[in-house]
Image 1 (tube, rainbow, N blue to C red):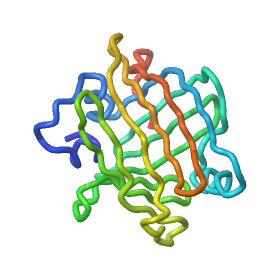
Image 2 (image 1 turned 90 degrees about the horizontal axis):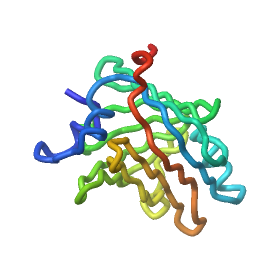
Image 3 (image 1 turned 180 degrees about the vertical axis):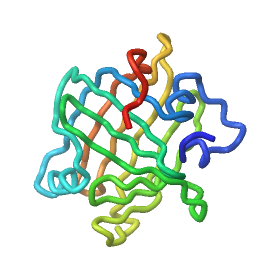
Image 4 (image 1 turned 90 degrees about the vertical axis):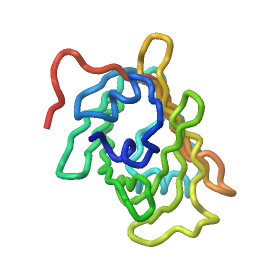
Amino acid sequence: MGDPFLRALPQDAKLPTAVLGLHTQPDRFTGRCQITRGRGILIALALRIGRFPPTGEDLPVSLTTQKVGEDWLWRRNFAGHLTQSRLSYDAGWNCVREQIGGLTIWIRPVWRQDRLGIEVVRMKICGLPCPKALLPQSFSFEWQDAQGRFCFDISARLPWLGSLIRYHGWLTRDHEGSAQP
């Protein structure tokens, strides 16, 4: 069985090869991305709590996925900035629970047309529940491009504060070796 995203999706979701490949078995992926952070003191604080990367153009990025029991660890390296999260399936909410820095985010993957969308359904900040009216709005998608690469466009906005972060780019399976534990 694949990662928590696959467990939370309907059985009949027809994912493209690159998207299915990233979510099926632990491995290492490399590619390029662009990162744009929102502005303001509260945005900066939220990004710091989540240990999100700084702004950058055409950056090297790698993702190493590792299975630990029923959970998955995702280690992202954005040009030397490490961001790690632990993903698990939450059967009660039928969604993915992601622990990233001081944030716990419940996200629901949704297959729409040719893209995997991600909706934020719940969040805790340093263990404290976030009111529904203040939940980040996700505009995040994963898909496969014409070259067969896994593509991502991850972005979120905070109500009344604006853009939190956006990082987008592509990844391919690293053929030079398997995932590092």
